[in-house]
Image (cartoon, rainbow, N blue to C red; front, top):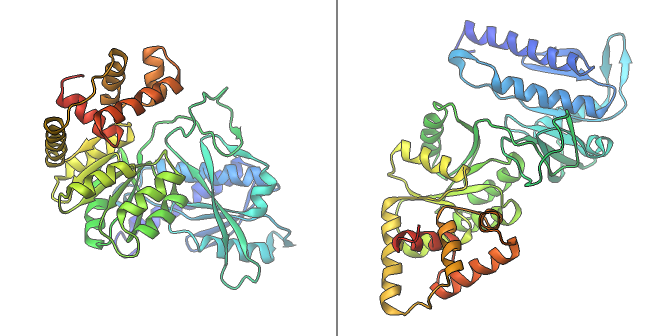
Length: 387
């Protein structure tokens, strides 16, 4: 309101219209508005969750003009309420308010009771993240909390049988195009602010959250399910390398681009071995940062030119020092596919072999060449003109 004045008032009015419309379309009823907050009631959990998902989508897609983006927090709680006239009262409303307080913005949080009632029936294009048992302020009983995440990327390789409104289970989502969801993890607020300011000027990015150390970054990855994380390597409490390994272990589908101020060969190789799909220096141009995020999103590797030279020199030194066991013709074909960023499944499809055989070839290639990761193998292929 202070920044945008009349425009903010108009946006707030439009926002309330969108809330009421989403509730009405899914059989709910809006019964309370307080400032920028609203309460709606539904007869079943599936309708409430569908309305929440639809509202997050329409809020994200709406053109808010000079205001830019608006993010809302939604909490969905199941329980019995007291009805007085056209209003509702009772503990579920209080729990919903406290549950919403756990969110930072752009999130939909569900109580354990709501998830139980859903019985796995989720809006298409969503997944559940189990955030564990949480203590809500002024609520004596702990609450099991889940985040409903609407993602722009498919988390399952299995094709969807149809495009119905709901999908069964909590792992499959539709393969939709949308802005790349980015999480910023850096202990310097100025760096995060600068990156957010630049990325939010680009239509194909949505900065969904920030964290100031690796531990917070791991928690934010669980809660927000970003597509790509920009991860600083030197941070207090938990460093970037440890955070990368933890995130990739639990969420291998999330791509991570490591960012640091200095080139140290040990840190470069450690980051790539931990699962990073890119490596940038903090003096990189803004557009190069955007290119690295896009490359990671599409399953490609983007390295700072200085990092590429360092790894290439290391491989040349290894080549001069140790004779390499020759690769078979099939292994060279697999190595060529690795250089293109292909997964084991894609290699198998391209070469007409099983995925298990492709995995075996990759392992043999790394062993023969004395390499530690697929990224290093890809660099080797480029260096030796095998692509």
